[in-house]
Length: 340
Picture 1 (tube, rainbow, N blue to C red):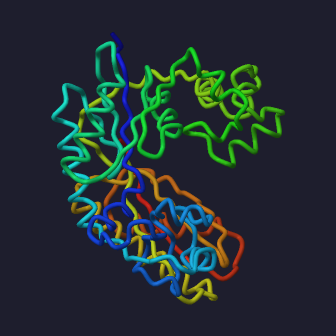
Picture 2 (picture 1 turned 90 degrees about the horizontal axis):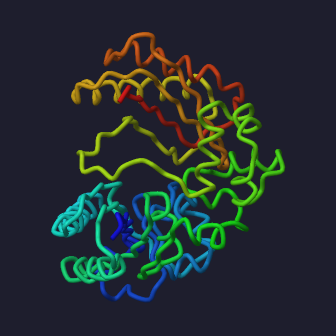
């Protein structure tokens, strides 16, 4: 009878919305990103499955995407339209007898009971298609981690169940960065310890990982590898944990004085926006993407939570001071983080 967690993930969401608006694009490689001009700097937000077959993926520079797939149709990001479609999808999910936790534009968790979660998943897929014209994949598990991982095996447009019983067989021999929450850098640090697969990580010594990654993170990594997740599905309204702005420059910034001026300007803009939200910042993070495409971040904690523009600007400039390389810069970002 469960309980079950379902992870609903809209397939190629932005590209799918664009194909609903322009049916003639169906079956063609479609790339959504920036202002839709691949000769300019910007990154891919979403690529259709046809474009992905050429190696185009989210986060890839638009110029690289154009080289890999010259015949692709490039379209600008239309945030208002995507938000409208997302709202319709989430409203549809709330029609089911379930707790719905929205993760973003294109995905959500649902907590359901019953002895046939696949039937619920199929009904969700059909209802979303009927209400919006969009296709989705549904992953099923006994917790959010299992459901999230299951979705990857169900794509595109399918239903897949992954529980503790088959977790080792499905994931055991895969690299650690397949797990939700483990990125390439963490996987590299694990590999340096001889931990390369999910099975290796599940069998790792908690004391060794605690010493390498910290007393909380080390054991948490092992729990990930075991498919354990005790976080509840909640329908509490989503509250962002940070607010930021970033700018991609069509020409590299060569002088560090110009970089400082740009970071200061971004920090002041962020300060104005969080002041309007009434949410004081406790930390400021600066993001620098060097040419051609190397990204680094540095942060600075603020002694007292604040929305004061001068304090946030000074924290941003202090974080920038930790960057020792003075290479040409193609992107800058400033992010204010909140305590909760």
